[in-house]
Length: 530
Image 1: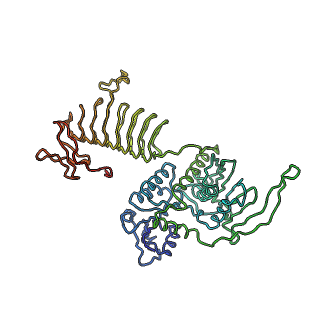
Image 2: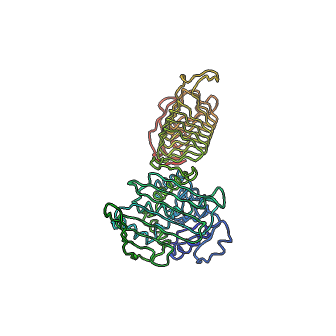
Image 3: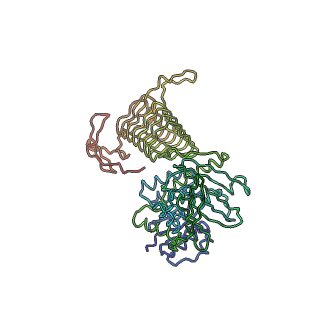
């Protein structure tokens, strides 16, 4: 097997992953910021060690990153790894917010990256056998599922017991019900060691068809128990993972109606055999296989996002005293940082990212794959195209239209009234401003309302635009004046013998008039990046 896996995090769980990937002879590097952790490992001579995560991401020999790091790092480290062209196995939870999880899934799907989330129970052979029984209808109609995950275990300070223990059970229950999502959840809990961190939680899930489930998790329990019970109208199944033998048992219990009264009929209990394979080894093998075959793993990012939605809903209920929280809502296809405000109704395209303290007013149309930096404001009725980049501290006021591929530099300014007064309302005097496809507005540039900036024009930093800017024009100064022409790729055109040519990409242009040019040799810049 090819050595192309880097395990990041050599703590308690990371050592288990290091062991398995070492046994598979797939381990290339172990990374941990603590050199003492690395020095304490017994590694093959071929395995490298590193304290700098960025160096691991820059190593072309590493194609798969395995993250066994604290939960609060999962989002940023997974994102960095996938953007660096790596496939990722990250321990649960995928992220700590649904928005961050959704962004990771979008990055993985856009870049065709493998994203596997360590819901280890998904790979347990006993659960695989149980899923097959449910799929075949051996238990009849599923009526009720409950799961207990209890222990006097390792206490966490970053996340509560719901986020630490329950992801395994939520993933298992969703899988048993055909990846069906609950319609509502309610969660109660208690915090005994730290008033801000729940040590015990009980979550109730209601699914379509009135199927119910509950999940009881605690790390303040006198004994260890990991038990999943599935109740069907024909049979019942118990999966007790902490039992030394007979972990999976079927009970032929049923309820018959006799003289119009329900009577329980107890049947025999029998053990269900399954292959005694280590779940962690199966998980690691799935990751290696998906890297080689470019396949989707069993515990995929998309399925992990569903788990994250349920977790987030349970957390919301927990913080609200156990009120029911509905999950019958559309998950946005865009990412918005938790400090951003996105007012409804909004029309925001797939893959768009809205960062810290941005404010998007209602009735805005924003296309796909846009980026809005910190403190950006977008007013109502603004239309923004696809792949638009709006850098920090920019306000896009009503009347402004940004076509596809526009770049707005930091702190550039739009206006919408020609003669504003604080004590005079002039909302009826808004003048439209159009920034056409591919145009760039430099940092601190000012675009006076009522003007058009042409296709692929370039407005220099600090320039003040007081008149229309032609296509491909390079303008600077106050007021802005044209000093040259710019290619669609952003490079200034050279002018020799009445021929305008791009020294970077080879595109050529012809002069139509003193203030107009047009391309005569086109170069496709669709795949260019900033």
